Image (cartoon, rainbow, N blue to C red; front, top):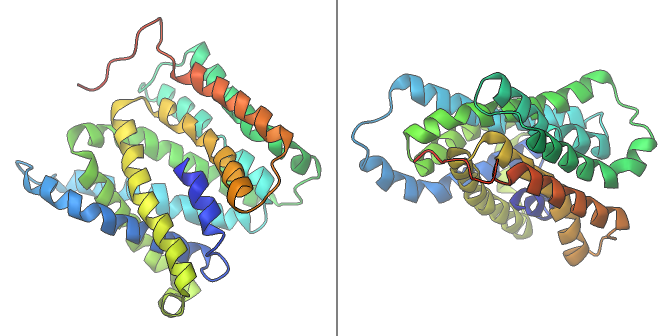
Length: 286
């Protein structure tokens, strides 16, 4: 839901802020919001994480935000929004397949059905746009699909470190790594000059998105710490529904009947994917 809200608010800033610069500012503000809570937790740790764990968490943060965003933006240069949203909507299915292949999660019929229903819910309101044809090249579609794959892989690989260390410092450290990566690749957008010339309205939008991203990413990693990756990523299906509902409420955008049907499919998919297996909840990490 936070991602959907961030998409709506970002529309106020995209006229002034290029995509990579916006992503860098978003996660920089998110990092600064998490930092005051991360430092006291770090001081209570018996020892600092070893260098190999720090490198792994930095790589995961860079992948989750930096590489994912770069691939997605690269693909969106040629792939229209509707097919791109559908391709990226395969995120939960890719997570399920990767998690099952690595032995992190058991593939059950209910879980698979829930994931597929949520994807169908994302696809339903996009169907008219998809039928019009994409006109995109294969590399653009491959980039969008690769961005979903990177996100799925990071979601699966995060869990050992989240079980080993507190969630807040892991969130802050991973977000800092992504900011450093984005600051380098966003130099092509001349972000130092653009940041100095942003209007107060753009700063307000960026600040809201950054603050909500810090809170949202903490919640995301907290969920990955306590639940299997697919149960967490399947909720990404709420992203386009949330954006449509908020766009209808605050931007006056039309809410098509297909969106209401999509919400019903997604709700059913989430219920199937997250209900306790065999009548009992899966145990948490303790």
